[in-house]
Length: 168
Length: 447
Image 1 (cartoon, each protein chain N blue to C red):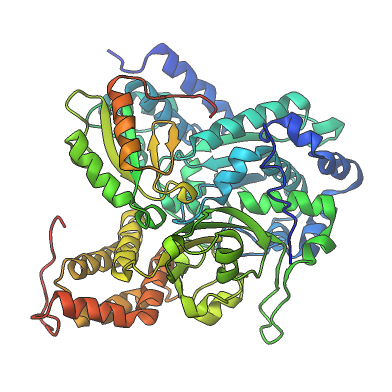
Image 2 (cartoon, each protein chain N blue to C red):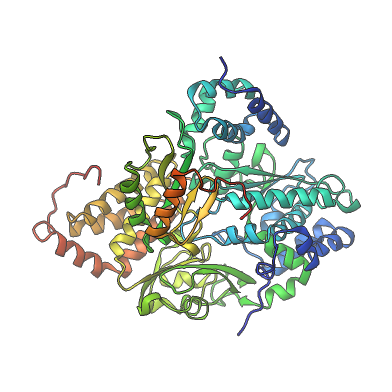
């Protein structure tokens, strides 16, 4: 039983034309799989390797280098990255990280028991002008405060948080 | 001295990211003219004359980089836009790509024309999702309008631009790490030579440039080399290796100021002027203690050094390696330099790619020492050990392949030399019984 469905395979193949080698489609392929499955399980590594005509070890080698990709289980519906680098740390980023750990009752890198929220730290999100900053999936939230985090967590638990591809 | 923004001229406009608004402001006129009236060599010459130096951190002259490409190469020649802006304190490329993606693209197209590159990859960090959407939309608009694709605007120049999304690794901002990452491997920087201009992406001649550098190219083509050289700092007369620092620069001001933001000023403005003229002063009525000069890896300056001009050469006079990225993070008088250095060491230990032992181990040892100091178990001796690590890792002492370790070392060296008293005071206060200890101390686990 394949873990990559026909659509993901088609999308991976449509990336191949951008590069002179198949291996170069590795990061796009890993992103496509991660978008679909929420992680990149070992079985997907084997299937990506087949599509790109590589050894699974080559895919695993690349994948394991990049912090973004996880292998053990699907990430939460909402992936939350809290910036802890100097621009945010100087304006309370690390305190927000601790607050979120308590509020969500998870440790860093863990997903809430209901599978909804994964909490991670980020190194500089490049949003120091709106520090402290948090990235939720594809949306940046700046000038965060405890109140705004409460609001955000409420929205996530009601599924009303922007997931979004909205061009905001 | 007021500077009329050029790089940021569009960002206040409504829908500044769209082609219609960009063209209404004169966008792509320079490209039309260049394709008609200028040869690629003319563009290279113009950029050389302008004295444009790379805005990504190293400050290498852009025109010279282009002239390293082999002559009459049968191709393909590749072009990479380094949009992996990950240096702590740096966010100006994000602002550019979100609010004026066409400016970046026009500069890219012109630079590809100059270097005869036929494929460009925009290496964009995943942390910038809005940039991804805006840049992709801009590329699509360009393809539809004939600014990208085959035979651009009826010329015999063709170019494809693709976005390549990263996956969370600081070292991808190093140009050969970036190349490895596009090729689908772990982003381990390559040993140089060969330099990318000779053998880079897919083993072909390759040019890698920062987003802001490319935006400058667009304005140099529009306004000429003389305009570009009319602002900035001329070469230092007694430094034959300084080609001068010309043109406008974007500065990302953040930390403890009243108005953090992305601001444009001629090269040579000082940290103090940035804080006062743009940042509205230090927040909460406090005084500043220090500032990250230009991205974390350039280290810190103390308030007494706030009059240092932010150009490519002057920071060396205050013990910093150079301009860096223009990301200035202000720290106020209440912020602990112990916290600062701990934060810095943690960042670099996390981001060391692991290829070179001195960096992989050195950044980690430095972090362990900072954790111990922060936890109240520091020894005065640790400050000398930290300094020793700082002086031993990197391409300057010749122990690593890329400059990441140098970047880890500058915050250590500058913080310890400029704020040694504060570190000593902290250690003696928090570890009154052990600060003189010289025996090895076990590492703390899980701090």
